[in-house]
Length: 347
Ligand code: NAP
Ligand code: G4F
Image 1 (spheres, helix red, strand yellow):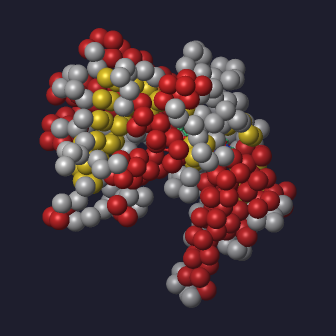
Image 2: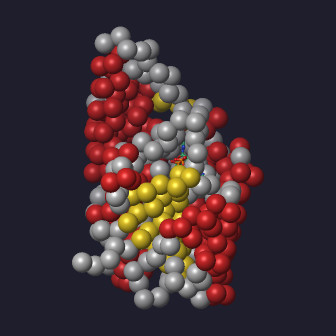
């Protein structure tokens, strides 16, 4: 029987981490994840994969934090992974303006800490994936590809640019198999509720069921290249299976405005956004990224990667999932379990 490959994921409790863990487990990997300590459980997205470790679970979790290099090093030594997928980050762009120092601490220095730990533990044997972002392109005109110069427009994007260059430098300086995936926005029913797509599907479905009336948004003119997270984690894995370490843009190649997303969501529910959507200056960013539109032809040619889920299917998937959630919420409410929670978003 072939020996299972061992992978270590930071950010395993996040949207991408949960899909990647599922994907790797299905391929027969032994998956280890770094989980930060929280006073409440933060493993909802991966609970369905968890088995009792006493019975030989293929997924194991380790307490750690990107701000704590000593622990990252210990985990690496204990786990001995062949592949490291570094997905952990303070990943909210708007929040990065409120918490620039922590964002840089976790996103930029967190990546550096991990690279240093890998350099000490095993310089060439470990393959390393860095979760780069299309936010790094910022104000650079579309379409954006691997050849487009970065023009970051937020503390988050600046931190990702730092991490990107560190990965390139560790590759060149120490011969590490280290790659940057430059991923455009990708969404799913597991998307955090303060990101635009999910905020809209959550609000519209709650409005439909009478649990909420208004959706407050910021800039609805911005355009994004939105894909499906389940498709994008396949690309992360492919990048680490290549003969040579290289950076890749991952995107759908089509772009839609925030307004278009919101309309598509409300349309599916037979609602008119004009009755419910209001502007709130709190959700505008000091500097915005106006248009993201990725050119993923290198990934298509070299990795054979193409996205499967398109815009309409993504909207359907997220609306269907959030409608079920809202129905359950209403059921509990009608059964007298609790007051409707105020889930007005904070970002
Ligand atoms: P996400 O849902 O926000 O997940 C972020 C993960 O990082 C969570 O597991 C979170 O833990 C963890 N984390 C945050 N701060 C940490 C710290 N100090 N120490 C250890 N772990 C920490 O993000 P995502 O959408 O899955 O994105 C995954 C990665 O891809 C991120 O690096 C993001 O910046 C990048 N990215 C995302 C997109 C996108 O469209 N989704 C596009 C390009 C790049 P908790 O669960 O405890 O919060
Ligand atoms: O959903 P968003 O918060 O995603 P954003 O800023 O594009 O960042 C996401 O994608 C990046 C890849 O390009 C990742 F690196 C990053 O980690 C994250 O996953 O906002 C999308 C757009 C923005 O233009 C924002 O200004 O929607 C606009 N928007 C308008 N009203 C809003 C809102 N965004 C949020 N979150 N909340 C609003 O009320």
